[in-house]
Length: 312
Image (cartoon, rainbow, N blue to C red; front, side, top):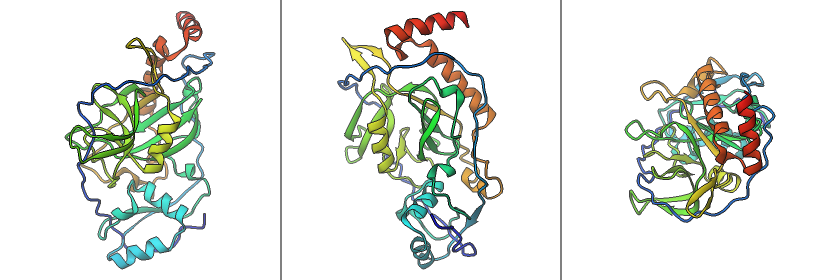
């Protein structure tokens, strides 16, 4: 990508329309598909190490534009990939750019989109889990890990203050390419992947206005929703009993609804959105729960896991 140095002295403001459209609060159980069990190494059931963070130095500027003409100029000044980076950093879509609201813009660009991730490139204590979905409510972002290595990140919009997304360790259950919300039949939820079955909470494509706005689900860009839809695994159910859990979805952190958007803090601290020690501790607690659940392993792995945990 080219350097993102245009329009630093102009002003920009995003008025993200508050779309309180949402997700199912009473989704009914649907017939699941059976996924193949994954092989897993259990050499180190729980690795008590801090998350490794490798990050190039990046400077950010909070800019604003006063008019729609200046917004158009901003859009036309960057390549498609550069604009994607700017929009993702601000958790919005292009059609949500509005005058009189600030956005954060990186002064320099990296060819690797993951350079701008609030998640570390490597998390040691996730290395024994084939696939993990992390969802940070504090910074409104998701991270996908394969054996502890970051493969993708992106922006989200979680539940608004009155209908917050529940934190916790959950697992991918069922999915649908096109789901109709039971809250309002006019709300179509593309690439829906449920991770809280009885609560009807999942990830899916829907409008990202730049702040938490859903009824409890986790909104994604279309490309991100499709990626997770194809990448994550559903549960394995036989005779109405869960034989093996799906991909773990770990939701954590607290969004501060009364303060400025956390990504604005990048302008004075490039690590402002990185995982905190408290969040790392929370994730380690989720890992312990994951290791203690035999439904996360096939029969052979489960016996080995229980034996190793007994020795720990």
